[in-house]
Length: 90
Image (cartoon, rainbow, N blue to C red; front, side):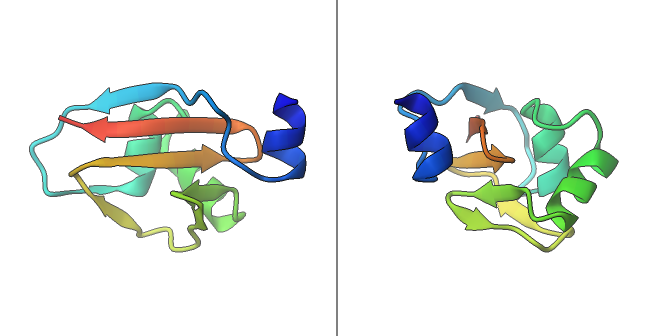
């Protein structure tokens, strides 16, 4: 059921791991956020994933390697087909 939901129908899973990110900045560069959330080992790996079209934020594909996100609220970040993280800022 989980495979059908996530891979075949391309929906978010029912349970998404949550990561709290502490920052005093108003924006964060997406590759840095991916490293802090555990979705990439380095920012250069994150940039490669973005270039390959393997990164989605709140369901929208990100293709700009210079993308930044505001540090308020939360975002669901997807790497590839099966890895999801909900990033919350404190």
